Length: 169
Image 1 (tube, helix red, strand yellow):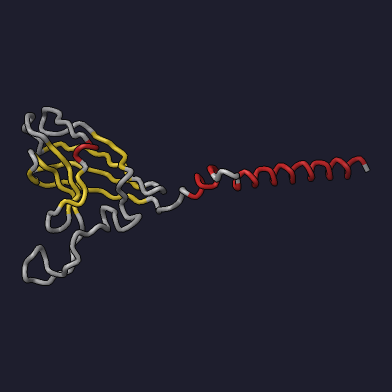
Image 2 (tube, helix red, strand yellow):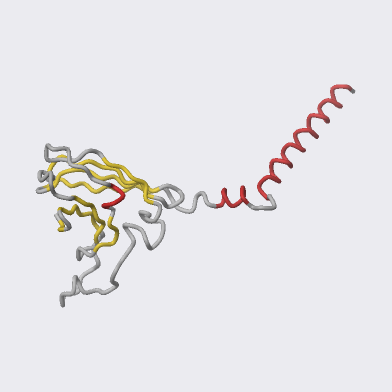
């Protein structure tokens, strides 16, 4: 008898704990429930820009979290010989139109040996492929003509480009 009463008491106690925990998700101010809804809006994605030919050599990694924010990290080992120049980084379409200018956020610093120091920044206004404003999905033109020429061509992918004193590399 005592054993069944203790089991019933434990069951009631666990039930109350479960009910009170579940009610935390439906608070009057909605803070907790809205915080949980912000998660998993996007799939976690990964992209890489491999600069493996002249004049620039290096690697830039893009990592998108479940909120659609993108962390960009990288390093270059060649192509940054001019220590007095200002360098930048852009995401461009196939016609070299700027989609995203990441220069200010990345703050690329030369290392004095032709490369750069490692850089890293989280961008909250840019995704990889979460929506139509992603680095892989954004378009500035929907024309089938290639870069204002008279030839028809399937639209190519977006790419990454380094800049030196504002000019593309």
